[in-house]
Image 1: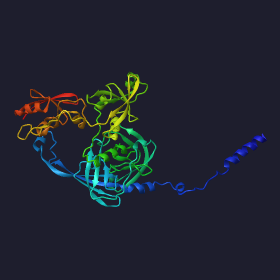
Image 2 (image 1 turned 30 degrees about the horizontal axis):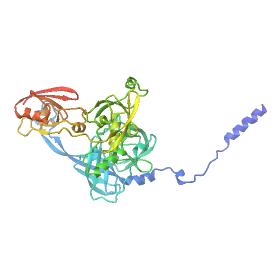
Image 3 (image 1 turned 60 degrees about the vertical axis):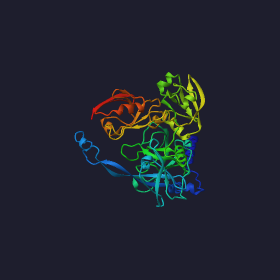
Image 4 (image 1 turned 90 degrees about the horizontal axis):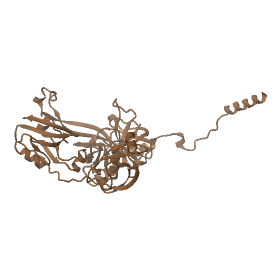
Length: 458
């Protein structure tokens, strides 16, 4: 008993003994701060003030179902203002921002962190990717951020979001990368692949920088997922690898982004589809349609093949596949791994633009005709790719319905089948059908795979 008591006392004395402590041997161990990163990156993040002249309805009754006919077409120009952020990527004033910030603006003013101001012009803009490249007029010797390979980012990496939220001035928020390869969300006007972060991103942060702990740009902040309008801890940034391709094309003189063409339709492999294909795991995307001119067909792939990797990176959605191709750019080739009948195969696919054949042969109905303004074009792979249509779409496409036909229901992207009694297979057929003007019209069309018929009298 006495021995037990001595043992217990010894344990208690050991537990109450003070822990060994060491003196910090560096300033970094005394104070943890992001200030050095901010000092390096913040001067290259700018505020963007953009203006665009848009048409506005003169009357509040313009959209009224009863009175609307009386006010239709009565519009007045008004100035639309937007506020956002941007990132300087070269000392001579190349700036990246979001399309929805300045991509289609008429006047752009850029304010640096040191309060210098520059006028800017758009070099290249792409609504689908929600990116725009600007050039600052008369700029030189500016601070610029380096791009980091965004594929090297991992969930849990520390990041800082820098921008001008709510127009209150440059602000920095910190967080981590909370998700990668987010492609199952639609944020802003952008469609593609996103880096997800919990760093606070608010209105006005759009186009700003998401930087790593070395002050390198890993993404361009583009949107938040929110129900309240404020940051709820889920923000999205466009990866730097895609930004790099935009800068390359802008410096090469492109005014629109040329993305590689796949010429396929595909869908993600879910659990039920994986079971039907004899796969142990649901992964990759299965090809459902393949255009005859598709580079994937030329590389040997067929309908029903499952694409597993592109450029040695796994892909699980069509958006991921399109991003990998866009980040590669035009002119090269990407290694592809795909599954066919239980066997994994490998090949290379050429990165090429969509062929602009057969000729578009655009046709516009002239003024004085009842259907004036109706603009048509022959569908080819390039047209289908530009408008996001199925690659196998054929026929004659509506580029602009014009005032009259647009009012009765025809839309941009509709495919014409018949006008009155004439079958439409080319714009020349449409030109013949519209040569004889009249007041009664019958227009048959295809929209999202569904047939429609418009009958109207003017």
